[in-house]
Length: 247
Image (cartoon, rainbow, N blue to C red):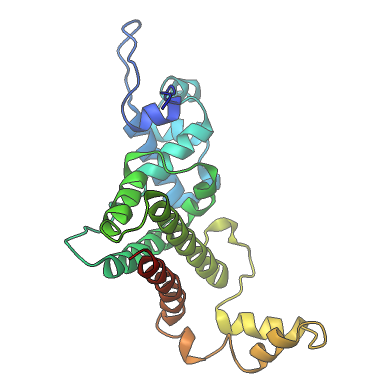
């Protein structure tokens, strides 16, 4: 397998940069800059993160930041990894029990920090935090008889589900920060009401019927997070079926 040179942003996340021996001793480090950027994102949303605002937060000139991060895009990638919490511990649990908690925890930290949502599609996991999540998911599936590629695809699918659920929750509550808009759809009941006003039963017969049947309102399956659990169970049932075929 060919060995590729580490991209600068990956080298920064892993502390693999080659330090220059020339010039004055650096007055900052990448961690200080990234922590400042995360504070700004938590306070003002992702749109508040600019090289100038980060420089002001740490008390240096804007151009000084480029000694530590090559561009704003690189800074955002490092931020996304640094703002990701540690995954749940395996603790010897069965794969299904662990991946249930793993997926829920994945969704929950995105609910806490909605500014991470637009950063997820920009790059595959490459930092120590995000790769630890992948490692734990693969570890949970060890011994199931699944091939490495299958286990990676399962982890990717569960990550995508957690991300979509977090994005949906923010969209329905207007909780995605300052960029969410001035007139959010406040909950599933409001969403169902809006659909009921625009759907033509002749063109959308089944969806219109589901709306009339209160499918997005007070139905029991939408209560107490049961919608998230329902979808997750479908995914994990598929994983179980794949394991059964392999064994």
